[in-house]
Length: 342
Image: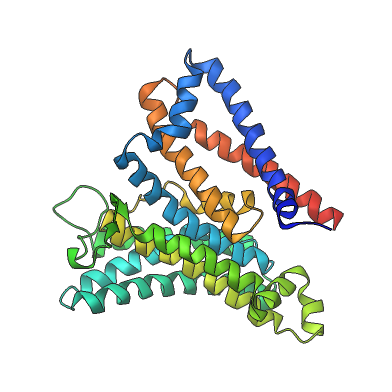
């Protein structure tokens, strides 16, 4: 009889193997570039813990990755290959900014939740569109989510350059949101936004919703076999659409928390491909909510560590992009083999 520990070890075996293989190949590449491969890898993986400032940046980076990865978990469990996290993130960020600037005269206790809810809803709408098209018209979700990414990025670029642009600042950035609605910092990590606590709590809530509720069971049934689920009385189409709404909403929430907690304004280039990396985090976690939190922390450490590595050695930070791509290949191959075996 399988114990919880044995089940856990079985689940994490493949992701751990992929991580170790990727890091080993990356180390060989680093060794061919620099005379200090050990120092380079030390900075890549551990420099985030050298100071409270570094640790705060690490948590701030992990927050959007966790929320986007959780959104991907919901969509993948519903059978939707959602690659629209970047567009949903930007929709939430720019909507939160517009609401915060337009409602600057409102009391903070009204404006803060209003801005956060607006960001969530904006992402939810962007997630709802491909969900409906997939269920009602059988339109491929990869195409629609990728196209929506481009559309949203173009719209936000227009807004940042023409509508909400701060004319006293350089680049495509908006006016600052009122400081009365900035997210408070974590108690013992002054520069870390409390948004990370929101992301961590939502990871646990997502696990409960997906694996301990009837709604979650119906979503997973719809994702496994839509027609069979409908034949057994599950409102599968509605569950798929609702899962995509939540997925988009979580990515939109990531954008909202970034604006209120880190950037304090909308910046057109604020995301270093959070959507793609969040997708990678979910795949590496085998689309599990708690695992997604862990992999988001791992990737946040690598993304920030790459900057420290580039400063202290001559290894370019683009190495992380290579490692990310390799991990995606390994985990995608693993998922495809699992699907064929099933």
